[in-house]
Length: 403
Ligand SMILES: NC(=O)c1ccc[n+]([C@@H]2O[C@H](COP(=O)([O-])OP(=O)(O)OC[C@H]3O[C@@H](n4cnc5c(N)ncnc54)[C@H](O)[C@@H]3O)[C@@H](O)[C@H]2O)c1
Image (cartoon, rainbow, N blue to C red; front, side):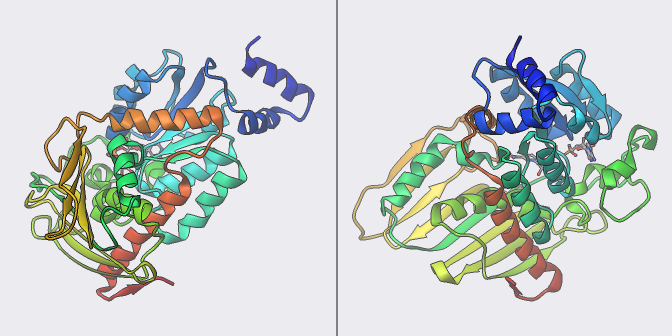
C-alpha cells in the first residue's frame, strides 16, 4: 500500500479525506512519492513550462483543463494517457488524487483559480502577475496561509543562480546606497495585422474564458490577445515590468510605491489594443529613498530587457543571464561580471540558465519539504500592486497615490 492509499484509509476511518490534505500540509511528501499535477490554462506558457516539468523526477500531469479545443489537443502529448480532460477547472480541483496545479491562464483568472485551488488542498504554481487588481491581493495571501499551501508565483528570476549571487553582491554594500533604478523591456516587434483570426467559436467555451469579466460577444482577437485588454490583462506593466520590479523589491526590501506617474501611447496599435505599445512609468518609494523608472516599447529594442540599480559606489546591471558591477568614476573596486547565460545581453529568454526548470524544481522541493518557496504569494501581490498603481496613473492621467 502506498502513502496515498494509507492516507485514504486513515481519512476514511477518521475525519475524511480532508485529513489527508492536512497531513500533507504538515509532513510533506517523501522524495520517492509521485506528485499528481493538473494544468489550468494550457496555452503557450503552460507548454513552455512542460520541458522543465518533464525533467523533474516524480511528476505526472494527470489533468488538462483549458477552454479551447486547440490548446487541449496541443497539451495532451505532455499528459498521462488516462488524464482528465475538461473545460471546467472545478473538476480538476475536485479530484482527490491531484496534489498540485499549474495555473497559466489569463491574468483575470489567476486569483480565483489560486484561491479555489488552495481551498481544495492543492499546492499551486501560478504565473505572474499574481493579481489582476490591487483589491485581489489580501484574499490570495490569506488562501495560501490559511490552507498552508505552497504557492510559487512564476517570477523565475528568484531562482536564477546569478540573481542569487548578485543579491549577495548588493547586500555586501558593493554598490553603496541605491537611489535610482532603471528598468527596460524593449522589443522591435511585428505588431498589427488582422483583427479577425478566424477561430471557430464552437471550439471555445467563451463564458468560462470570461469568468468575472463583463459579459461580451465572442471576439477571437480579444481571446488570443487578452493581455492588451483591461478586462483580462494589464498590459506591459504587469506582463513585463513585474519581472524586473520584483527583483528590485527583493533586493532593496521594497513593498509598494507611495506614488506613480505614467505616460503611454498607442503609436502602432490604435484600433487593435486598449493598451499602449510604448509606456514609461516612474515609481517613488520615499521611505527607502528610491525612485524606479521603467520604460517599455515594442517599437525599438534599444537596451532590450535589463535592470540597472544605480548606487553611489557602483551600478549593478542585471538581465536574465548575467550581472555586471560598474564602479562609479573615481570610486574603489574593479568592474566585475558573471555571465552564466547562453543568450545575448538583454535577451527576453536565455537558453541557460534554465529558469523554468530551476523555479519549478524549487516549487517541487518545497511541496515535499513544506518550506517557503522562492516566490510566495506575498511577493507576487506586492509587485503586481506596484504595476497596478502605474496603470492607475496612466488611466487617470494623474499622479496615483497609494491609499
Ligand atoms: N513567467 C514568464 O516568463 C511568462 C512567460 C509567458 C507568459 N506568462 C504568463 O502566463 C500566463 C498565460 O500566458 P500565455 O501566453 O500562455 O497565454 P495563452 O492565451 O496562450 O494561454 C492561456 C490559456 O488559458 C486558457 N483559459 C482561459 N480561461 C480559462 C479557464 N477559465 N479555464 C481554463 N483555461 C482557461 C486559454 O484558452 C489559453 O489556452 C499569463 O498570465 C502570462 O503573463 C509568464
